[in-house]
Structures are given as structure tokens and as C-alpha cells.
Length: 424
Image (cartoon, rainbow, N blue to C red; front, top):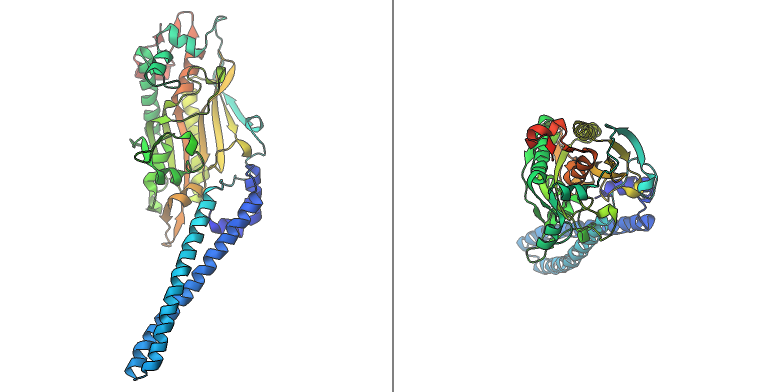
């Protein structure tokens, strides 16, 4: 969440940033934050003043008793009792104001960087780069859901029987391809210096609040109500929360973690080609990159993550493009975000496969994730993450773009992991 210092010292800039994200009532909300913070601070000052007076009077009572001034000592005792009673009300008022302030801050998104373009939605995102190999498919090219059925790779109907729509069953070479991609992505991350984490796939509410999924995306998360736990929408949540309430040493930064997990999302219901097959699932596999860094180095970290994801797509020989997201299409928590999309030749459309984001201090402030600099001061870290990569649409593009009359050709980089060169 935004810091009070950020809001009070750069009020106009914060409001402009929130308007770029199309946050409703930005001016009124920020004014309310400042008002509640002033109330909290003034109440704290009054409480501190009263506590100091209580301590002073308490010391005076003892001295007055020694001097035999019992009447004056009794008057002082009554005054102390009245101050203590008043302090109870002040303490309650301060707690209420602090809670109101925290709840307000939770509703405010991160402020985008200056280089984030203006815009309302996906149509306003800026194409930064287009790369990868062009593909030429047979005239009778099939979409991946037909290829999955033809080669008995993925059974969508069986998933509906077992669970429901959006929970496919991978079979045979389809399952092997999934496992191959997971291992390939993890090995590539390890080669780039990331330490692998195997986190839980359920988290508590504190973790959801720490990374910003709660309260913003509560409706999109599967909630285990009896235990008040949430199925994770991405490994970003448990891995980043490793560093909740932690003070790191400056020498430890940047921290680089990667994790493979199943991910669970209660996507809004819709119909048509955009959600057919693997295009949109409720459960899917993903390898996630997470970095914790110093503010002055986070831009470089972000670029290194972008280079890593681009390198994966190049090794998979897929046509891709990189988008700089506009303010209206960015996530609640991101300050700067780039999306990677691969082109599906059979569907004639771009499919998002990764978002790589810099959150500045927004998540770190929620997490209380700090580092100690050489001067022994503590500062908020910057957090970053990105998919490297999400599997469903990668599999869809691989199946569609590599189909031939003889079968589906496996990219060279994946052959050692799959154990076969062709799906036929």
C-alpha cells in the first residue's frame, strides 16, 4: 500500500497517478486519508502528553507524601485517575483512527510510474517489441482443443466430470509435455541465478493482504471458509510472503526466487473462443519469478526479468510480442508492468503468457519487508515478480504453431525434457 509519507509529501502527484489508473474519487479518497491520519496523529500527541503528565504527577505524589502534604497528594491522585480514564478514551479513538486509516489505504491502488502510458484498457497498451519465428501452417490447421482430442493429449470433458469446466485432465504425451515445460522453466531459472522454492498452495488471509490480492481480488480466489485459507492464484503470494515482517541485510539483495505451483482462479464466466480449451482455466501450472531488491537496483532487476522471459520464448521458437501496459489495464498493485503474448496461428490471436511487474514499495509496505543499509537505517524494499511461464497458453501455442501433416513437432530446447521429438 502507499505510505503516509508518500501521500502527504506528494499529494498532487499521487492523485494524478491514481487518475491514470482510473481510480474513482481519487481526490476525495486521498483527502479522507489525510484527514484520518491527522486525527490519528493528533490523538496520539494528546495521549503522549497525558501519559507524560501522569508520570510526572505520579512522581510528585511520592514526594508530597514524604513532605506530609497529604491533601495535595490526594488531589494529585484524583488528577492521575481522571487522566488515566481519559487516556482510555483517547487510546480507543487512536486505535479506531488507525484501523480506519489502514482500511482506507487497502482500497487505494499503487501509483504508476511516469513512463506508464495513458489509457483505459488493452487497446491502449503500447507494443514495445515483436519477435520470434514466423509460422506457416497447413490449410486445414486445427485449434489446440481439436489437436488435444485428435492426439489424446488433454481431456476437457473428463475434467468437467471430475471437477467442472476449467479443470482439464492431461494424458500421455500431453502430461509429459506439461512436466517437460515445468522442468525446462525451472532449470532455466536456476541457470539465471534463481533459488527454487516449493511453497504451500494455500495461504492465510494475512498473506493475501501482504501481496495485495486481498481485499482487491477476494472474489477471484477460492476460499476454504472453515479454515479461512485461500488457494493461491500465483506463487507470487506465498513466495513474497516469506519476507513478511523481515528485515534483510543490504548484502542479501537482490533476493531471487522461483517456484512452480498449481494456481487457482475463479475467472468470470464467459463464452466463445476466448475461453475455449486452455485459453482460460480455473486451475493451471505456472513457474513464477520473485525478486526482492533495493530501490536503486529494482529497475535493473525488472529489465533482467524481462530479458529472461523473452529468452524462454525465443528458445521455444514461438512468435511473441511485449506490451507496456497502460494505466487502465495494469493490476491494482503494479507500478510498471509488461505483458508477453504469444501468437496463436490457428486461432489468429495473441495469447497472454506472462506479466512482469515492478511493485516499487507498495507490497513491501504491506508486508513490512525492509532492509538495513550500511548506516543501520531500515528502508522498504522493492518487490518484483513475473511468470516464467504460465503453461496453458504456452501449450496451446506450441500445439497449434508446430502442427504438421506428420504430427506436432517439439521445439529443440524441449526434446531432452520430453524424450520425444514429435507427437503423432
